[in-house]
Image (cartoon, rainbow, N blue to C red; front, side):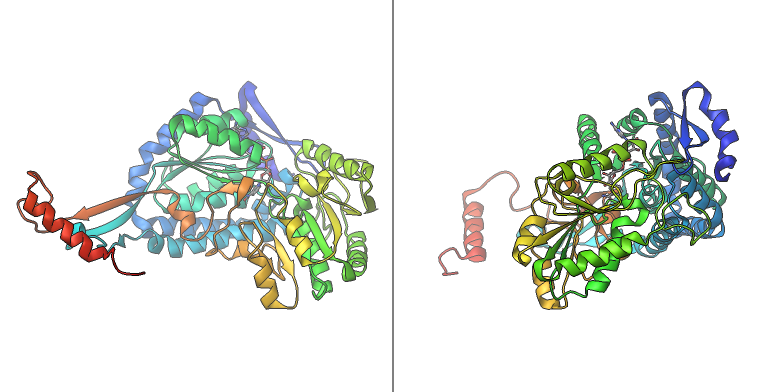
Length: 512
Ligand code: NAD
């Protein structure tokens, strides 16, 4: 079994207050990890704080060398990394390879190359009479200790992946992985040690929600990825200490298919982006709107492709397409959304129920005759369901796509690229792909984040590393008079002169 490596250490650390880690595809307990108390978290944060100055001092190049070592470590140890992810999530190895290893190693490479550029001092030009001749710049300085709190669906990319820019900016990091999938984070701790990271630069605090809350209390900045419900709690807690937070939260991503779309490509994309990782992706396709003339053809393609999917406990690469439901309570939510839809008049055309037998699986499910009175169209399902709704035209689709409290990602399908972009610009979401879905996540220079209740702040792009820094404005006067013109004592003549300068600069009498 894959995670036996972790068991002795976890057993040592776990004591009486350990959390059992389950393989959701088999139901077996595969490890125990400690449920860290608030005191233990404070101690970890104190260690990270002591290590921070040294880490910052080794410069971008020094940090990049170590992070590059970690990148190579992940690739050298890919079998073990993938096995660990697969065992604690129940996803097929392909989902771990593509959406976790590829993404995270690309991100490390990206930040190693770009961190220095994005965090270089920014020169500022004078825009006022009072700053003429001054030297001015913004310096980006690390907060100190960053707490990263992660979800269970992507234990590598949405946990360790978000630590990378924080570390590259010169922060030390305490990572609190999901209690459901903590083993990958512990593996990363080992990888960072072997890559040469100094002691306490990257620490993992395993534990439950209370451990997460303790992290918010103990660190200087928090990056949180998880549900909107918990995101609110994190923000409330952070408000007590005025700790800055960024939040990557839930979504209900719409896909709009217009009648001139390449239906075959759109259907393949809907099935992959709806069901990959068992539909447990924040930016998965959660609802589909199809223009009336192509609705039947599109649905029939989706039905045929969904029926061909193979589901079961993940084995060797190529053996199954869809894995398990990672988190036990998620099965109840998926089932509730399907039942609610059926009670209100929807039809299940593929799947629709839990699979009997060992492990925790929900069949890939296609729902039709759906509308916005149903939870499957308004609440985040976070499972292998694809509800498809017929719409009159693009305007109706757009209205429905925006009829949500979420605003994470979205997609629009048409061969008319000009129209596609025009409609895309009217979608209320952090990202929209035309004739693609979520590929923007792999474009690390595009900001990725949510609008409305899907989040605050972004990962990736310059903004995705500057968020881990204070902006420090520095102004230097090289030579100056003994007394500036506006200093005390105020004199009538000087005030009159300043008044004339103000009028001259802004010419209030001139027409616009
Ligand atoms: P969750 O909110 O239940 O838990 C996330 C993390 O928060 C876990 O580590 C948990 O232990 C911790 N936590 C719980 N209570 C806490 C508290 N009071 N204070 C601090 N931390 C606390 O989310 P989940 O079920 O693990 O993940 C699924 C959710 O994450 C979905 O809604 C999904 O859309 C979202 N998600 C979003 C993104 C994104 O980039 N926007 C990416 C992945 C997942």
